[in-house]
Image 1 (spheres, rainbow, N blue to C red):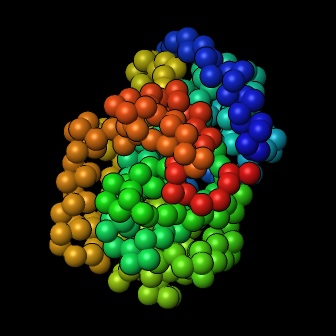
Image 2 (cartoon, rainbow, N blue to C red):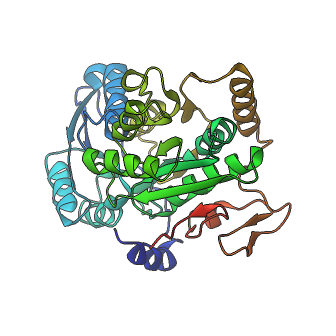
Length: 360
Protein backbone atom coordinates (compact mmCIF):
# COMPACT_ATOMS: atom_id res chain seq x y z
CA UNK A 1 0.00 0.00 0.00
CA UNK A 2 1.41 3.40 -0.95
CA UNK A 3 1.95 5.87 1.85
CA UNK A 4 -0.42 8.48 0.37
CA UNK A 5 -3.16 5.88 0.18
CA UNK A 6 -2.47 4.83 3.77
CA UNK A 7 -2.66 8.41 5.07
CA UNK A 8 -5.90 9.08 3.23
CA UNK A 9 -7.48 5.90 4.51
CA UNK A 10 -6.39 6.62 8.06
CA UNK A 11 -8.15 9.97 8.05
CA UNK A 12 -11.33 8.45 6.65
CA UNK A 13 -11.63 5.30 8.70
CA UNK A 14 -9.66 5.43 11.96
CA UNK A 15 -12.92 5.52 13.90
CA UNK A 16 -14.35 2.32 12.40
CA UNK A 17 -17.19 0.79 14.39
CA UNK A 18 -16.41 -2.18 16.60
CA UNK A 19 -19.79 -3.74 17.28
CA UNK A 20 -19.73 -7.07 19.08
CA UNK A 21 -20.39 -10.19 17.08
CA UNK A 22 -21.17 -13.58 18.54
CA UNK A 23 -21.69 -17.05 17.07
CA UNK A 24 -23.07 -20.21 18.62
CA UNK A 25 -20.52 -22.59 20.12
CA UNK A 26 -19.07 -25.04 17.63
CA UNK A 27 -20.37 -28.55 18.19
CA UNK A 28 -17.77 -30.99 19.53
CA UNK A 29 -18.19 -33.26 16.52
CA UNK A 30 -17.45 -30.49 14.06
CA UNK A 31 -13.83 -29.29 13.94
CA UNK A 32 -13.54 -25.54 13.58
CA UNK A 33 -11.90 -24.77 10.25
CA UNK A 34 -9.37 -21.93 10.46
CA UNK A 35 -7.47 -20.25 7.62
CA UNK A 36 -4.27 -18.21 7.65
CA UNK A 37 -2.80 -16.07 4.88
CA UNK A 38 0.85 -15.03 4.87
CA UNK A 39 2.55 -12.30 2.86
CA UNK A 40 5.76 -14.32 2.55
CA UNK A 41 6.85 -17.96 2.61
CA UNK A 42 6.65 -19.91 5.85
CA UNK A 43 10.36 -20.51 5.40
CA UNK A 44 11.34 -16.82 5.60
CA UNK A 45 12.65 -17.47 9.15
CA UNK A 46 11.06 -14.17 10.13
CA UNK A 47 7.54 -12.74 10.04
CA UNK A 48 5.55 -15.44 8.26
CA UNK A 49 7.64 -18.19 9.87
CA UNK A 50 6.70 -16.92 13.33
CA UNK A 51 2.99 -16.72 12.45
CA UNK A 52 3.09 -20.29 11.19
CA UNK A 53 4.81 -21.50 14.35
CA UNK A 54 1.87 -19.97 16.23
CA UNK A 55 -0.58 -21.75 13.93
CA UNK A 56 1.17 -25.03 14.69
CA UNK A 57 1.08 -24.25 18.41
CA UNK A 58 -2.66 -23.71 18.24
CA UNK A 59 -3.17 -26.89 16.22
CA UNK A 60 -1.28 -28.89 18.83
CA UNK A 61 -3.18 -27.22 21.67
CA UNK A 62 -6.67 -27.95 20.30
CA UNK A 63 -6.00 -31.25 18.55
CA UNK A 64 -8.92 -32.57 16.53
CA UNK A 65 -11.21 -29.75 17.71
CA UNK A 66 -9.81 -27.57 14.92
CA UNK A 67 -8.50 -27.96 11.39
CA UNK A 68 -6.09 -25.31 10.09
CA UNK A 69 -4.86 -24.43 6.62
CA UNK A 70 -2.65 -21.66 5.28
CA UNK A 71 -1.79 -19.89 2.04
CA UNK A 72 1.69 -18.39 1.76
CA UNK A 73 3.19 -15.77 -0.56
CA UNK A 74 -0.08 -13.83 -0.86
CA UNK A 75 0.55 -10.38 -2.42
CA UNK A 76 -0.84 -7.30 -0.69
CA UNK A 77 -3.38 -6.40 -3.36
CA UNK A 78 -6.68 -7.50 -4.91
CA UNK A 79 -5.46 -11.10 -5.14
CA UNK A 80 -5.53 -11.28 -1.35
CA UNK A 81 -9.30 -10.72 -1.34
CA UNK A 82 -9.74 -13.69 -3.66
CA UNK A 83 -7.67 -15.86 -1.32
CA UNK A 84 -9.71 -14.68 1.67
CA UNK A 85 -12.98 -15.36 -0.15
CA UNK A 86 -11.78 -18.81 -1.17
CA UNK A 87 -10.92 -19.65 2.43
CA UNK A 88 -14.36 -18.49 3.59
CA UNK A 89 -16.10 -20.42 0.83
CA UNK A 90 -14.18 -23.53 1.89
CA UNK A 91 -15.87 -23.35 5.28
CA UNK A 92 -13.19 -21.62 7.34
CA UNK A 93 -15.10 -19.77 10.05
CA UNK A 94 -12.07 -17.96 11.46
CA UNK A 95 -9.43 -16.39 9.22
CA UNK A 96 -6.18 -14.72 10.27
CA UNK A 97 -4.87 -12.17 7.74
CA UNK A 98 -1.31 -11.51 8.83
CA UNK A 99 -0.02 -8.43 6.98
CA UNK A 100 -0.87 -4.73 6.94
CA UNK A 101 -1.63 -4.55 3.21
CA UNK A 102 -4.42 -7.12 3.55
CA UNK A 103 -6.50 -4.62 5.52
CA UNK A 104 -8.97 -3.28 2.93
CA UNK A 105 -9.33 -6.70 1.32
CA UNK A 106 -10.06 -8.29 4.68
CA UNK A 107 -12.87 -5.79 5.23
CA UNK A 108 -14.24 -6.46 1.75
CA UNK A 109 -14.20 -10.23 2.26
CA UNK A 110 -15.79 -9.83 5.70
CA UNK A 111 -18.70 -7.90 4.20
CA UNK A 112 -19.34 -10.77 1.78
CA UNK A 113 -19.10 -13.41 4.52
CA UNK A 114 -20.79 -12.02 7.66
CA UNK A 115 -20.84 -15.48 9.27
CA UNK A 116 -17.03 -15.73 9.09
CA UNK A 117 -14.74 -14.10 11.63
CA UNK A 118 -11.57 -12.32 10.62
CA UNK A 119 -8.47 -11.30 12.56
CA UNK A 120 -6.21 -8.75 10.86
CA UNK A 121 -2.64 -8.27 12.07
CA UNK A 122 -1.18 -4.72 12.27
CA UNK A 123 -4.23 -2.95 10.83
CA UNK A 124 -6.60 -0.41 12.32
CA UNK A 125 -9.94 -1.00 10.53
CA UNK A 126 -12.52 -3.12 12.31
CA UNK A 127 -16.08 -4.29 11.75
CA UNK A 128 -18.60 -6.50 13.54
CA UNK A 129 -16.77 -9.60 12.29
CA UNK A 130 -13.25 -8.15 11.99
CA UNK A 131 -10.77 -7.75 14.85
CA UNK A 132 -7.29 -6.24 14.78
CA UNK A 133 -4.18 -7.27 16.67
CA UNK A 134 -0.61 -6.03 16.79
CA UNK A 135 2.62 -5.99 18.79
CA UNK A 136 4.35 -2.90 20.15
CA UNK A 137 7.47 -3.62 18.13
CA UNK A 138 8.84 -0.17 18.97
CA UNK A 139 9.52 -1.29 22.56
CA UNK A 140 12.12 -3.76 21.33
CA UNK A 141 13.53 -1.21 18.90
CA UNK A 142 14.26 1.21 21.73
CA UNK A 143 16.24 -1.45 23.61
CA UNK A 144 18.13 -2.27 20.41
CA UNK A 145 18.90 1.43 19.99
CA UNK A 146 20.36 1.59 23.48
CA UNK A 147 22.63 -1.35 22.67
CA UNK A 148 23.64 0.20 19.35
CA UNK A 149 24.36 3.53 20.98
CA UNK A 150 26.74 1.88 23.41
CA UNK A 151 28.50 -0.38 20.90
CA UNK A 152 28.77 1.71 17.73
CA UNK A 153 32.26 3.15 17.32
CA UNK A 154 31.22 5.46 14.50
CA UNK A 155 28.00 6.50 16.22
CA UNK A 156 26.14 5.64 13.00
CA UNK A 157 23.74 2.71 12.68
CA UNK A 158 21.94 1.41 9.60
CA UNK A 159 18.27 0.45 9.34
CA UNK A 160 16.88 -1.73 6.56
CA UNK A 161 13.24 -0.71 6.29
CA UNK A 162 10.37 -2.29 4.38
CA UNK A 163 7.47 0.09 3.64
CA UNK A 164 7.11 3.50 5.37
CA UNK A 165 3.83 2.82 7.17
CA UNK A 166 3.55 4.04 10.80
CA UNK A 167 4.56 0.67 12.25
CA UNK A 168 7.92 0.90 10.46
CA UNK A 169 8.37 4.62 11.19
CA UNK A 170 7.71 3.96 14.90
CA UNK A 171 10.49 1.41 14.89
CA UNK A 172 13.07 3.70 13.32
CA UNK A 173 12.16 6.55 15.66
CA UNK A 174 12.24 4.32 18.74
CA UNK A 175 15.64 2.93 17.70
CA UNK A 176 16.95 6.48 17.26
CA UNK A 177 15.60 7.56 20.64
CA UNK A 178 17.31 4.58 22.24
CA UNK A 179 20.64 5.53 20.65
CA UNK A 180 20.25 9.17 21.65
CA UNK A 181 19.57 8.18 25.27
CA UNK A 182 23.18 6.97 25.56
CA UNK A 183 24.87 8.93 22.75
CA UNK A 184 23.41 12.39 21.98
CA UNK A 185 25.52 12.60 18.80
CA UNK A 186 24.29 9.30 17.34
CA UNK A 187 22.85 9.10 13.84
CA UNK A 188 20.75 6.60 11.93
CA UNK A 189 20.74 5.98 8.19
CA UNK A 190 18.05 3.92 6.48
CA UNK A 191 17.06 2.37 3.17
CA UNK A 192 13.48 1.39 2.34
CA UNK A 193 13.24 -1.61 0.01
CA UNK A 194 9.47 -1.15 -0.55
CA UNK A 195 8.80 -4.80 0.24
CA UNK A 196 8.39 -6.87 3.38
CA UNK A 197 10.30 -9.83 2.02
CA UNK A 198 12.98 -9.66 -0.67
CA UNK A 199 16.24 -11.27 0.50
CA UNK A 200 18.44 -9.92 -2.35
CA UNK A 201 17.21 -6.35 -1.82
CA UNK A 202 17.48 -6.72 1.96
CA UNK A 203 21.06 -7.93 1.74
CA UNK A 204 22.04 -5.23 -0.78
CA UNK A 205 20.51 -2.53 1.43
CA UNK A 206 22.54 -3.73 4.41
CA UNK A 207 25.72 -3.71 2.33
CA UNK A 208 24.99 -0.19 1.08
CA UNK A 209 24.47 1.05 4.63
CA UNK A 210 27.73 -0.52 5.79
CA UNK A 211 29.48 1.10 2.81
CA UNK A 212 28.16 4.43 4.13
CA UNK A 213 29.88 3.89 7.47
CA UNK A 214 27.18 2.17 9.52
CA UNK A 215 28.80 -0.26 11.96
CA UNK A 216 25.57 -1.63 13.49
CA UNK A 217 22.73 -2.98 11.34
CA UNK A 218 19.08 -3.55 12.19
CA UNK A 219 16.03 -4.28 10.08
CA UNK A 220 12.28 -4.26 9.70
CA UNK A 221 12.17 -6.82 6.90
CA UNK A 222 11.38 -10.49 7.02
CA UNK A 223 14.46 -12.50 6.01
CA UNK A 224 17.83 -12.98 7.76
CA UNK A 225 19.63 -11.50 4.71
CA UNK A 226 20.63 -8.20 6.40
CA UNK A 227 21.94 -10.07 9.43
CA UNK A 228 23.91 -12.42 7.19
CA UNK A 229 25.34 -9.56 5.13
CA UNK A 230 26.51 -7.88 8.33
CA UNK A 231 27.98 -11.12 9.68
CA UNK A 232 30.00 -11.57 6.48
CA UNK A 233 31.79 -8.32 7.34
CA UNK A 234 32.04 -8.97 11.05
CA UNK A 235 29.45 -6.26 11.81
CA UNK A 236 27.10 -6.64 14.78
CA UNK A 237 23.38 -6.67 13.97
CA UNK A 238 19.89 -7.46 15.22
CA UNK A 239 17.51 -10.20 14.09
CA UNK A 240 13.86 -9.68 13.26
CA UNK A 241 10.59 -11.39 14.31
CA UNK A 242 12.33 -14.55 15.51
CA UNK A 243 15.65 -15.52 17.06
CA UNK A 244 18.04 -15.60 14.08
CA UNK A 245 21.15 -16.64 16.02
CA UNK A 246 21.66 -19.63 13.70
CA UNK A 247 22.44 -17.21 10.85
CA UNK A 248 24.93 -15.07 12.77
CA UNK A 249 26.04 -16.85 15.96
CA UNK A 250 28.98 -14.52 16.64
CA UNK A 251 27.40 -11.22 15.57
CA UNK A 252 23.68 -11.22 16.45
CA UNK A 253 23.20 -8.99 19.48
CA UNK A 254 19.55 -9.90 20.07
CA UNK A 255 16.33 -10.11 18.08
CA UNK A 256 12.77 -8.98 18.64
CA UNK A 257 10.59 -12.09 18.80
CA UNK A 258 6.90 -11.94 17.89
CA UNK A 259 4.83 -14.16 20.19
CA UNK A 260 1.48 -14.85 18.48
CA UNK A 261 0.64 -18.29 19.87
CA UNK A 262 -1.24 -17.34 23.06
CA UNK A 263 -3.31 -14.77 21.19
CA UNK A 264 -4.27 -17.29 18.51
CA UNK A 265 -5.21 -19.86 21.11
CA UNK A 266 -7.37 -17.35 22.99
CA UNK A 267 -9.23 -16.17 19.89
CA UNK A 268 -9.82 -19.71 18.69
CA UNK A 269 -11.17 -20.62 22.12
CA UNK A 270 -13.49 -17.61 21.95
CA UNK A 271 -14.98 -18.94 18.72
CA UNK A 272 -15.33 -22.46 20.12
CA UNK A 273 -17.10 -21.04 23.19
CA UNK A 274 -19.30 -18.67 21.18
CA UNK A 275 -17.68 -15.66 22.87
CA UNK A 276 -15.83 -14.11 19.92
CA UNK A 277 -16.35 -10.39 19.48
CA UNK A 278 -14.58 -7.65 17.56
CA UNK A 279 -11.64 -6.27 19.55
CA UNK A 280 -8.40 -4.35 19.12
CA UNK A 281 -5.27 -5.77 20.78
CA UNK A 282 -1.87 -4.08 20.92
CA UNK A 283 0.54 -5.82 23.29
CA UNK A 284 4.23 -5.61 24.07
CA UNK A 285 6.69 -6.75 26.71
CA UNK A 286 4.11 -6.50 29.50
CA UNK A 287 1.61 -8.81 27.81
CA UNK A 288 4.18 -11.31 26.57
CA UNK A 289 3.47 -10.63 22.89
CA UNK A 290 7.02 -9.32 22.46
CA UNK A 291 10.29 -10.61 23.83
CA UNK A 292 13.96 -10.22 23.03
CA UNK A 293 16.27 -13.11 22.25
CA UNK A 294 19.13 -13.63 24.71
CA UNK A 295 21.58 -10.73 24.69
CA UNK A 296 24.85 -11.91 23.19
CA UNK A 297 28.13 -10.75 21.69
CA UNK A 298 28.28 -7.67 23.90
CA UNK A 299 30.10 -6.64 27.11
CA UNK A 300 28.45 -7.43 30.42
CA UNK A 301 27.78 -3.77 31.23
CA UNK A 302 25.89 -3.28 27.94
CA UNK A 303 23.92 -6.48 28.57
CA UNK A 304 23.00 -5.22 32.05
CA UNK A 305 21.86 -1.88 30.62
CA UNK A 306 19.76 -3.64 27.97
CA UNK A 307 18.14 -5.83 30.60
CA UNK A 308 17.30 -2.89 32.85
CA UNK A 309 15.93 -0.89 29.91
CA UNK A 310 13.69 -3.77 28.89
CA UNK A 311 12.52 -4.18 32.50
CA UNK A 312 11.65 -0.48 32.75
CA UNK A 313 9.59 -0.62 29.55
CA UNK A 314 7.81 -3.76 30.70
CA UNK A 315 7.00 -2.14 34.05
CA UNK A 316 5.71 1.04 32.40
CA UNK A 317 8.50 3.21 33.78
CA UNK A 318 9.78 3.96 30.28
CA UNK A 319 7.04 4.86 27.77
CA UNK A 320 9.60 5.27 24.93
CA UNK A 321 7.87 8.16 23.16
CA UNK A 322 8.10 10.77 25.90
CA UNK A 323 8.85 14.44 25.18
CA UNK A 324 10.75 16.43 24.46
CA UNK A 325 11.09 14.86 21.01
CA UNK A 326 12.10 16.90 17.98
CA UNK A 327 11.83 15.99 14.33
CA UNK A 328 14.45 16.28 11.58
CA UNK A 329 13.77 19.99 11.14
CA UNK A 330 14.30 20.67 14.83
CA UNK A 331 10.61 21.30 15.48
CA UNK A 332 9.24 19.97 18.77
CA UNK A 333 6.80 17.18 17.97
CA UNK A 334 6.26 16.02 21.54
CA UNK A 335 6.56 18.61 24.35
CA UNK A 336 8.56 17.85 27.48
CA UNK A 337 6.85 15.38 29.78
CA UNK A 338 4.12 14.48 27.29
CA UNK A 339 3.61 10.81 26.31
CA UNK A 340 2.43 10.15 22.77
CA UNK A 341 -0.92 8.37 22.71
CA UNK A 342 -1.72 5.37 20.56
CA UNK A 343 -3.61 7.45 18.01
CA UNK A 344 -0.56 9.64 17.39
CA UNK A 345 1.73 6.62 17.22
CA UNK A 346 -0.49 4.94 14.65
CA UNK A 347 -0.45 8.03 12.44
CA UNK A 348 3.32 8.64 12.72
CA UNK A 349 4.81 9.90 9.46
CA UNK A 350 7.76 12.00 10.65
CA UNK A 351 11.29 11.16 11.69
CA UNK A 352 13.21 11.98 14.86
CA UNK A 353 16.14 14.36 14.70
CA UNK A 354 19.30 12.34 14.09
CA UNK A 355 17.80 10.17 11.36
CA UNK A 356 19.19 10.89 7.90
CA UNK A 357 16.99 10.55 4.82
CA UNK A 358 13.35 11.18 3.88
CA UNK A 359 10.36 8.88 3.94
CA UNK A 360 9.38 9.77 0.38
